[in-house]
Length: 539
Image (cartoon, rainbow, N blue to C red; front, side, top):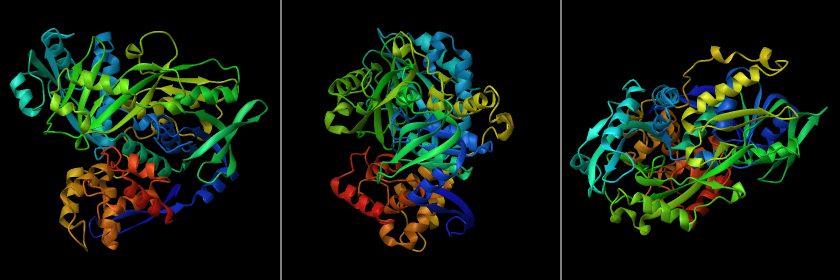
């Protein structure tokens, strides 16, 4: 299914009330896209495009969003899963940038999506002979916490013994001290999907797996796009007053559709990660300095351990980005600076992934480049947006909207609500206290039917918020949907049906890699994949 339209709410015994949606078919969505004229067509369903579509729809514009693959199917679901202020930016004196990042981080994790983000304590080990001294890092984490108004506690130094008690696999040889600070963590794919849903609830029309094959022009101006539905080959087009190119690593590819002679505007940096099973509990994350500028992360995430990341220039086809043996060796070698060998066995690796950071064009080391957002206008009037950080995705949406309002001739300004008048901290769908949701699911989420398992209740609460009650209702109505997809994962089959009907899942990878955590856990077996495909085919 591809579009969702709100209808009056129903009731559910577990929650009192739940949201109901009427889903349109892909054919209906294509018809809508091909017959209407939109104020804004956003090409690219990564978080930059999604955030812009959300803000544009909120401002009253008629918005369409399309992507050649799945929403958040590339870079936006290949991040380090962090909402953070950017500790390393303090080295360059970017104090204002860190403060702004902290503001956005705390807004998302506290007011916008507390059901999708969680606080995470970081330990920054200081080893003898390392690139930074204890005094410097102690002062750094104090300043870092001060820039977030000490909302995550006061940055300080910790003894090696205390840190090792919280992270048993921490290497303590030559460990002088540990600096402590706080940031936040998320499941990036789930955060992106909830932002898509927010855009749809605000009036946007969205379609994934719809590839742009060409642009439409009117008197030399870009006024839409030709598309091909990758699920069945159907060709159609979309007309729009303005087109926004938010295709991330492919931004220059689309710019050359507008102007064959367009010069490169970006460069790409590859970031690879590994996911491993954990051999012991982790009560904090590790952020280990590799050199003056780079840090390697070891993050407890989704009951697993996430290691990374690399940072090297990438010049190939973005579609071919993948984790190489060299990447794997580098990540494990760098992790070994602070983690004992038993946690770094290759046998523990369940998944690996790589994404491409989009950086402004120019010389220099990619690890030192600023993650800034750049908005440019092409010869045919198409806007292109590139760069930025996950943490500031709402700010990026507002930045693009301000650009739209200030375009020469102000073509959209009279039809849109000024961005300054929009709610500053509008929550994403499902906002709720995840602890309260999990408790409610455990108490009566399976009524009528068997009691829901604690790990499933917690998983639903922290990935859907109050929308978890919709999934509990499906499981209660059909006992087969209450069964686990895999015995070793918390997900249940109701989530697959929900992804099909309410989260635009078209392929098994859409479900297993981005709507659930089965792929990253190494549990997307052939039999699981086949059953998921059967559910997706039952529309």
